[in-house]
Length: 228
Image (cartoon, rainbow, N blue to C red):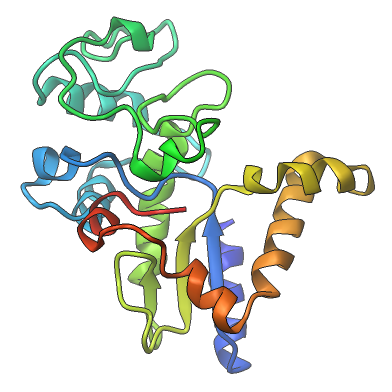
């Protein structure tokens, strides 16, 4: 998948095109986590930290549960990450969210409070979990951000001026009604989600696009928690 993305970026740049690449996992965490983990209050500090600590092999073998266990051990209370397989034994990573105690961070980011069906980023395992995709996906996006080329910006953390590639967090379930109406024409629901969302975003221009890229949220919150 990463090779495909790199080739797509190269082809777009050769054709003088701009790209918006949307990834369906959280790009950041609730307020306070970045400071506790990295000493800085911005989401991209977490990107740098996670990218340096995650091991993710070509066969998908990875250390995400071990890493979450280590992060939990470094923070007060029990948590914030939860959800894991029965083995190996990870004493600082609860199997269930209800086993957490004295967690110093909110369960959800501000944007997720507007979309209650969105899963919390702390959940690493079982149906609907987005915590594992975030831990493994953020390093992949970080690699795209640092790839050679004119400019790649991560929205909403970086200015978009001069960027020919923009990376953004998306949540295809925002188009749940449209997907239900159309998915019979696709091989699976994921395919319908990706295609319909890509077409919707590609069709935006002018004021509609400007509004989408300028959410009604404080700049400090956007820099730390991101947005969908």
